[in-house]
Length: 508
Image (cartoon, rainbow, N blue to C red; front, side, top):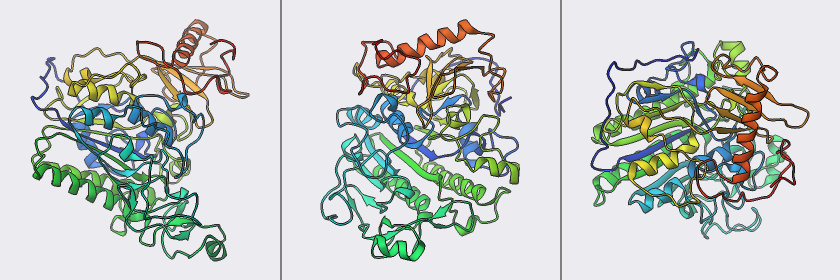
């Protein structure tokens, strides 16, 4: 059973939305599993008191899903309300450099809220593609602006890094410019606290010098970049930006802060003051540090008297990295909780993630648990409903608002079928408690009753062939109509692709 930490009240009632639209903060961690929040996992080997506070003072969604099981497509889905497999990206993730997966005409949470009168900022990891000056380190001109990046997708301001740290072009970007250009080189170094790597000095003057020094070709990095500074710098910058906004001339204007953190994704690099905390080695220390920075933000909001009408969403881009298995064996900590597999997988461990929403002025009966399905892909429609923004027919085509769940504890919200997607392109569909995993390569269909079998250990396809047929019809319709929600059919960005093995290529 999934732990239900909080109790429903005895009498249903609903709250009215506050007169002023809420400030909105989305905190997006990286590779954090469902079991990496102590309020969700009674056997966790570390505590996350600030995440637990978000749940206790808001709504804990225990059946919430990232829109994919890896980084880039999940971020696309969260920001656009559209599944990334509808784009050119059918498998895997992007690097740091390349055409942004979000087109300039695509509606995003940032653009919708900006058009509704919000000031919008992003602080953290992007990983959706950027157009850097020059084609590689040999012809870079860092005095020129970076294009096709967050400032072109609805954000008024940006501070952060382009992608995961193993992809290079690592620097602290201030808007379109690297504050200190990435003119030196490095590669993965041994990590003393985990089984992965570090990105830290000393750096070399050329890719070849890096190969000579540590046996691997170098990637571009700024001389002042150090991996373990990301969480502190991002939290500092987010707090400073909100403080400046709240004390300035535009303090009456609501704001959006999108804060995608880099933890606990590799490199697992907690600051020394967290060494020895918890009972789960370096990984536990890193999650504890992450929770600490969430606490810093909450404390600032309290002190600034901004907490009441600030809506905070906390969630993760996918399930835990593959080191979850060794962690379970060594420490008895299950980052994927009771769920099957982890990051990259189409099974629950790949995409069922922590998801907490706190909004003191707007949530009816805080401390609730909601155990029906929702998706991160639903945030665009949810925010639009809360602030009264009207979405165009081609915006948020897979996004279904769950605002009613927040504002009315008696809501009977039912999610349309959710699509799950694995790193190699395998699909699944979840409708209520039933999940059909689609054929892919040599693997066939599988059907699971998640209410009875959340760990997906018993394939019941043979016992429920009609249920499977109904789910296959639903996923086919969702793929072919270019949308999940009602409305005019939309076009996917490409035609048929090979991962759609259950659909006849000629069946449009």
